Image (cartoon, rainbow, N blue to C red; front, side, top):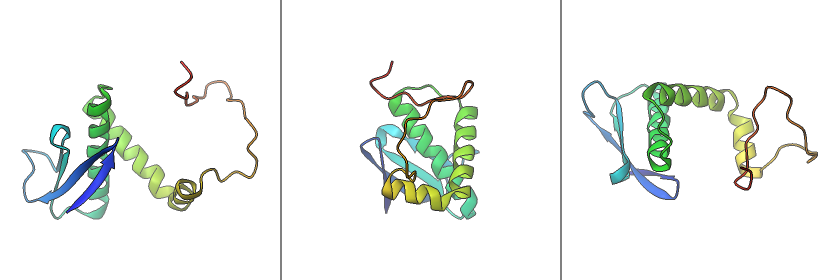
Length: 119
């Protein structure tokens, strides 16, 4: 049995022969369980797991994402992770990879992540 921690909760990951009609994965947030269909190609399995994790976050946080938004986020994030595995692993392990910690402004037209203190 495998599991993932998602927003402080442990979700059990199950591989099953059948999930639901027309589905290859399913998140049951209230049961803290993600079901994944057996035998998926690795790329599809990764995309599906990330998709279901996003559902768990969405349902827990009450953000109200549409299925189309979840599909886009999962595929987009997976592409970024796949294209930058070394950099992301290093960042998650060591923190910032920059040698300088100077505060940079955000150019016009770009988004900045607001800290919890910002509102």
